[in-house]
Structures are given as C-alpha cells and as structure tokens.
Length: 159
Image 1 (cartoon, rainbow, N blue to C red):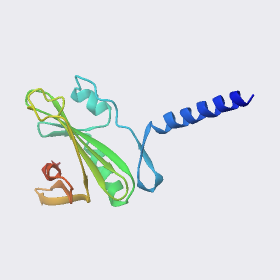
Image 2: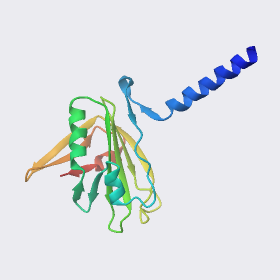
Image 3: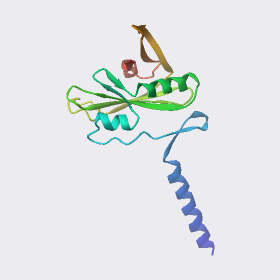
Image 4: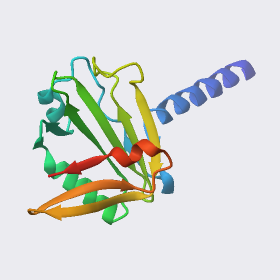
C-alpha cells in the first residue's frame, strides 16, 4: 500500500513538471504560449497563418499584430511577437520579441539562412524596451534600447 502511494505521488509530480514545461513563465507570474513551431521550409504563407509579422522584401503582412504587441508593451501587458523576414534567396530569418511586462527578450535566428555563413544560429539578448527612432512620411521606425548584447542594436522595423 505504501509503495503504491509513493508510485502515485511520483507519477503526479512528473505529470505536473511536464505540464509546466509547455509554457514560458514571465515576470509577475503571467505566461505566454510558445511560438508556433518552425518547419523547414517555412514559407511566407505559413508564417502569416501562424500570426508572424512577415517582412517580404519591404512588403509587410500582419502589421496589425505588431501594433497590438506595441499596445500591450505600452500597457505593460506581457506579450510576444515573431517577425519573419526573407532573404533574396527566399530563406527565412526570425526576430522574436518576448515582453514580460518590464523588459524585452530579443532573439535573432538565422539558422535557416543557407547563405548565412559559419556564425549563423540563435542569439538572445535582454533589452530595456522598444523606442520609436524616427518618424518620416507617416512611418515609424522601431528600435530596441538598452540591450545587454551589441547585436540588439541591429533590430529595426518600420511600416
């Protein structure tokens, strides 16, 4: 009887741990779901279907998703957004921003860029926030500010 209780307790613990692994925990106890899985090939149609903001050679799809993300940042509400861009050869690169209500974790991923060179892969940095660098011709240019790694300064998005 005692052995059965230990086995049941162990099984319940394992199930709880596995369930907790399915979500990213944010500051303040809130969580955001994981980004949709990346498949190879990851075509623009699939990225749009997954809710990514898609930059296809300066043609932007799902811009309203970026606007919603920025609204949530302004309200200090946790949110996340993935921006998928495509190289001239058609390979995707990804910029993932996860906002926890205080800071932005920025991940740049060029691992599917066949011509990305030897240093391609995922890089992550933590940033203080997002700023509008300039407005010209009615368009905003968004940048990251206060990043702890230099590559964060290369994030740039404009509508």
